[in-house]
Image (cartoon, rainbow over the protein chains, first blue to last red):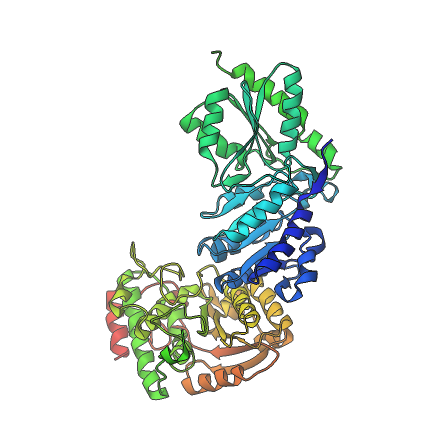
Length: 315
Length: 279
């Protein structure tokens, strides 16, 4: 089993490094700094850390003001509150003026677990992706998280980075180099391509291993940057393998599956299947139980590959 | 930019009265030409913004992003015609441009957009967001040991928004004495009088309870406004709010206290009538 590390721990540690490197890096939180792990930065740089209390709309506005004055603000809370609790503030105060605010949110998806549906962000990516000018990243592990956060700090413009709550298997080694807007072919394949984001990348790799034993050669593509998305690599995957399955810890509509299908249908129409949450809110439960009940396991990805292959055109 | 290059023209009260009348005429002509816009809440804020731009703000129209400038943030973004008029009169862009308000391709959007209009600090239009933004600008100024002051203008109806009070709490928490808010308290919002739509009273006590110093003035009296701003600038350890009692539509008899002119432009005949009153 690969080592498991929490993305948010990598986020907290990277913020401290960035704080040392650049005095303009400032961090805001909305009373969840111990959970988002911005508390590491708060301890190191108390004068550059602003706990806004339980007031996400105000946090977003303050971040916008700091950015307009030359600061590089990272604002964090749970994915269910940003963007959901303050969408209009993000739209008017950050997206429209294209301000340099980095929204890094944790506890994305249903693996939040026992806290239940009020705390499980399943539509956050749809909201974030809808904002013109925003860059949206969903890292696959802690190593990619650290690099994506660094990239956000050194790039101009608004970012939305969505992290998971749980410790997540490392799918990369330390020498991995994240490239903004570039998807990563985790393993090549001939029969179909699984396109995944976030924690579903590890599950996609597991599914591809199992399928290999059944004689099916499946590629796995980590999208990393959801927006701007790597169209060329998606088109190539559709061309090379002729069948695509997307996998995301998010609602089926408005996230990865929607974007990929738009690209595929326009440039290289091939059969597709979608591993995602089906137009519903989830419930309390252990993360593993929820992934199983709502169809987000490696087994579900395997099943989707079998289904898509039945519809694939024979050469 | 060194201080020596900073050229602000500070005017006397008498000179500012003439400027205020000119700004009112711009507002009528701009909204009349556009056929839409918000004359009422623009007219009520005229003296507030005149006193700031012509007697208080350290700013440089030739260098809108001058780092040491005082910041003026318009939170009630529908008063854009007024802000554009004052920026043009200060020299941020040609006065002739004012009549392009709300037209396709114009730098003068229906509500303020900082990406296209020189001198506009914040994109606004969805109410309740400017005070939070101003808190961020004030915190940045403190972090950078900058001496600039941050002025933010809100509408009274805007204070229905919960975010205003989140920001009010934060400004007092951080003891932001470089932050001065002004509320254009004209008493009216789109659906009628504040007291009938959503009662704000006791308004001054609300701000006090949130930790702010409160000063109340006649918002059309330039001398009172200047005194209030100077008093606010000397306060230490807390933010100040100036509650400016104003009349919506001020200066045009048929617009005064008439909520219909919140978001409706005067027609051609009304423009002529208004301009006659503002001669």
